[in-house]
Image (cartoon, rainbow, N blue to C red; front, top):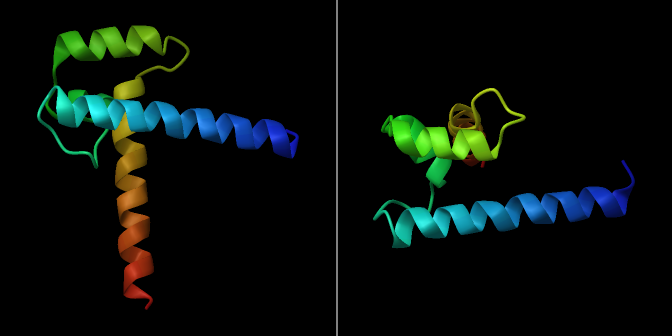
Length: 84
């Protein structure tokens, strides 16, 4: 993938993540450190999971994957903090 296309794709991913985190915090009363998808997975909100997973139809279980990504990033952050 060309560099410009990669940068554009990452920008879109981050923008959607920010919107999801804002929705989770402002509307659902959750944390800004967690996307709506990951929260739906953790709290097993069936209706929300169905809606989000239907929107991301090309992924088997978007909400579960979103949670796994957040866990991975948290573990990496803790690992990096321990190296200082």
